[in-house]
Image 1 (cartoon, rainbow, N blue to C red):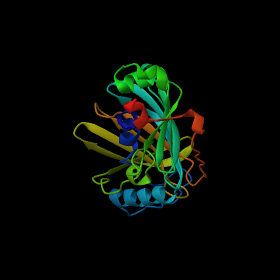
Image 2: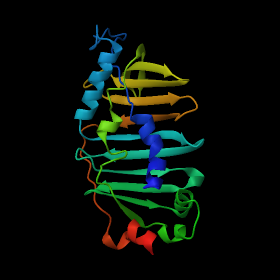
Image 3: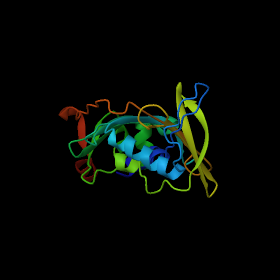
Length: 233
């Protein structure tokens, strides 16, 4: 659905090309678990680890058409997910992907923005709108979140902290856009954070809750509107 793609664009853009670099080194003289590895090889290792976790959470802020948007998704090992998006004046919405279908529930401002106005916005308000998701596209796909093929040409920087956890850092600058990626240096090399700066798709995303169970249930039947039926009425 066009509305879905529009608001999910920031989440996917900020996290689909996640690159990670894990390294230690501290006052405690902890051993660098990736000593001797190139940044690109570490990125590949981190990408595989994050993807193999199965489930995860991604949350943060970005921009869409110059306007701020917040996202918060929990992705299950099955590829199903649930999440929320808040575009301020553009409205807010919830998303569920389960059993081969997508369900979106937005406020009136969300539907007015998504549909370019129109009389249907008030009708859709606070209802779950059902659309097929047979191709399994969108923010629920770990394959899209943790692509390793694009994670090349990286440079390792000084370690940093993310939510109290030591993180190794990789950076990449291309066409005026800089991406900075943070990866845990202890335990598995999961991505912890990614920051994009520049005029295209700026934003900050956090990754957490790797491997934790995520339960996604379809909305009650009485709260669902079918998009095909709605558009034909």
